[in-house]
Amino acid sequence: MPEWLVWPALAFNALAAGLLIAGKFLKPLGRTLAMYCLLTSVFHLVPDDPWQMSILVKNWALAGGCLILSASSDQWL
Image (cartoon, rainbow, N blue to C red; front, top):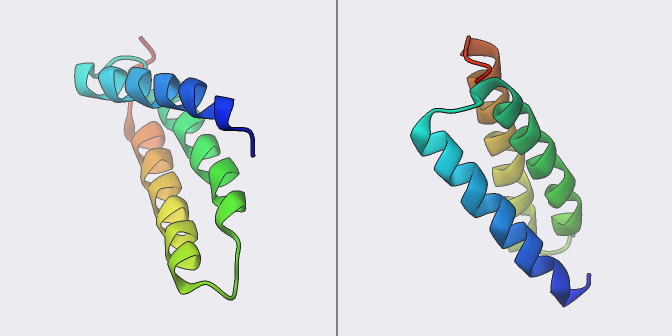
């Protein structure tokens, strides 16, 4: 994976955290964060490494939480 992708990922995570704290765009943000967690979990699919597998499971758990946030939120803006 290219190292330059760290900076866009950092910017996305910072923006998403700020929007979550502010409580803005919760429904689309929850869906976007869930997809982001599922996408990044692919990079941790290393069955021989227990640490990487625990990160994969953590990402799936976070994706589930983000989907619950998205489903329970009535706020689009």
